[in-house]
Length: 266
Ligand SMILES: NC(=O)c1ccc[n+]([C@@H]2O[C@H](COP(=O)([O-])OP(=O)(O)OC[C@H]3O[C@@H](n4cnc5c(N)ncnc54)[C@H](OP(=O)(O)O)[C@@H]3O)[C@@H](O)[C@H]2O)c1
Image (tube, rainbow, N blue to C red; front, top):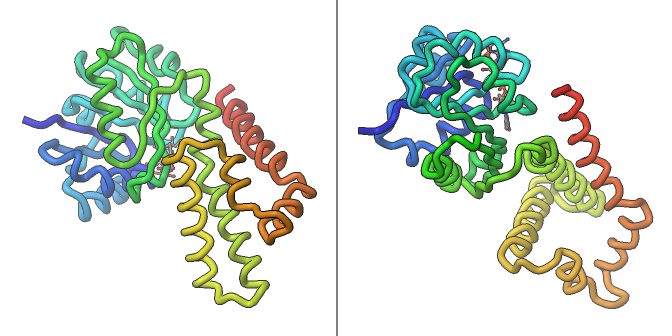
């Protein structure tokens, strides 16, 4: 018998999870509740998921509950759910910035609690998911959560104090990478390349470079040295980036996103 997995929320990340994790959820019953029922109905028309009429119905039915509403709405849905969540349930919040402490505080007798920060590339099997569980959660449950998200990319345990950093790095990171890919392609279009082909070349190049970093475990700077031959084209590009403080700009972007995450949570 599979588990019953409940989703509170029916937004982009739940849709991505239902798409990508379908094989991992085989044998499980999936239930979704959403404030706007039409959005849950829309998921039910495309995925094997049942719509719960209320937070209570979802809470009572579920072995695992993913909280996937906007961060400001978490307190409200958890306060509605807390009396109905089963004692042995596993409650997993993916809301940016909402701490385990703040969720635990709603329960007289807290269930097993974890916090995750997945990212959208899980929709293409290349996600990066941070996992942090309450110390009371049995290791095999944490392993099951890591195993679930490992089917759609990588999943690692990260201390909760680093979740704002992870939100900036892997949560917001895809948007920074999209910007970089767009800019690289624009540079190629400026030099006469067709736009569609430019996006393909830029995206495949970034993906390939990332693959080398992960597979070789070599320092990115060392890999840069391998590509940049003396007096060559790559060095000309690198010096242009360095003159405009490219690395400081990117560091600042991660820092600004992490600061914004902390601000939203204070
Ligand atoms: N997208 C990502 O890459 C990503 C990655 C990691 C974590 N997350 C987290 O996942 C959560 C959902 O993100 P998303 O990208 O899926 O957002 P989204 O597509 O904008 O969906 C937002 C969800 O929150 C619900 N919601 C908003 N205000 C509500 C309220 N006052 N009461 C009850 N429900 C409310 C929405 O319900 P309605 O349909 O009724 O508006 C919808 O289900 C967020 O907490 C976010 O931090 C997202």
